[in-house]
Image 1 (tube, one colour):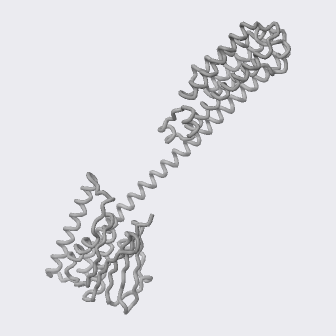
Image 2 (cartoon, rainbow, N blue to C red; image 1 turned 60 degrees about the vertical axis):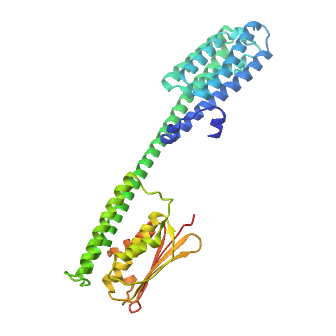
Image 3 (cartoon, rainbow, N blue to C red; image 1 turned 60 degrees about the horizontal axis):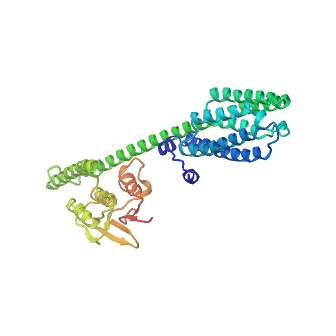
Amino acid sequence: MTLVTSLGIAPDPAADEDRPASGALNQVFAIFPALLRLTCGLAGAAVALAVRTPPVSTPLLVTTIVVLTGWSVLFAVATLRRGLTAGIIYVDLTLTIGCCLLINRLVAAEVLPGEGSWLAILASTSIVVAHFGLPASRSVPAGLVVTAAYAYGAHLAGNNTEAVSHSVTLVVQTIFGAGLAALTRRSSRAADEAFADYQRASREVLIARAARAAERRHNRDLHDTVLSTLTVVGLGGVGAGSPLLRVRAAADLRTLDALASSRSRALSAPPDPRVPVALDDRLRALLHRTPELAPTVDLQPCAVPPDIADALADSAAEALSNVVRHAPGTAVSVRLTALAGAGVAVEVSDDGPGFDPLTVPLHRYGLRESIHGRMAAIGGRSEVDSAPGRGTRVRLEWSDVH
């Protein structure tokens, strides 16, 4: 890209992104012909003027070299700036054909044999350049016309051997050049198709991943509110007519309503992720929604990004819900501390009966998704330390490490 920019080519960003192989090939098919035409044109001019013995017409030769040198420079500049177009190629072929027909006036007889004259090089260069910018259906006929013009010009110069030998060379260049250009273009299209397939597959994976993440968030929200309350009722932790049940149900409704409202707001005006929020305030609000607990609270003021605060508070809420479901009436503590650097840790502990985390069935959603899954989603970590008879400690950590 640096070379392209320095040469004055303005690449098409959309083409580079959607068809990177074709974009790169187009750049090569502009740079190489431009440099080839320029270098061969300048070198040919120097060689042509070195030998001017009869029957060379010096005025005609000088005029031709001036025109060809100017054209070589114009060809290079136009191709580097706008790409290799059919119009430029046809002008180049026309000039080459005209020079080939004047071989007897432009090339000395002693330098014509051996396919080493400047006009032989010019003819080969024009054929090669044509393959870079024209399809085979047009570059092959163009190459054959150049070949015929060179053969006729060499015949007029009285050298039929050169007419035949270099014509064979030009025909080979025409056929193999067209085949190589077609193969290169076909390969670039195949590479672009493979890239497009990869892009489509990547988009499908991202869409599916986003859908799964949304589904998991939805399931966590339901599990941590309505399902949690129903589980507590089912286990007998809260009586059917208990005022506490009304409090929990009202809190669940407020939570679900807040979730719906926040998602609606996020669609129209998503919160700025760079503005931190007070995690300790989030945890206090959480404890206010669980009146059945009377925990010991130690909340150090901490500010974290909004999505991090949501994940930590929701994970802590699930840990507290587990206490209500499985260890009601036990002593509970909630602690928030700042870690070294830019990190926080939330601990929820109880002195209940405890359990063996390794024996929790895989289909159980609480620990797997509402705590471990939620923390993993934000790049944090969670630890559940428990054993039968010695209570449970859930530790949630997040660190802003870049």
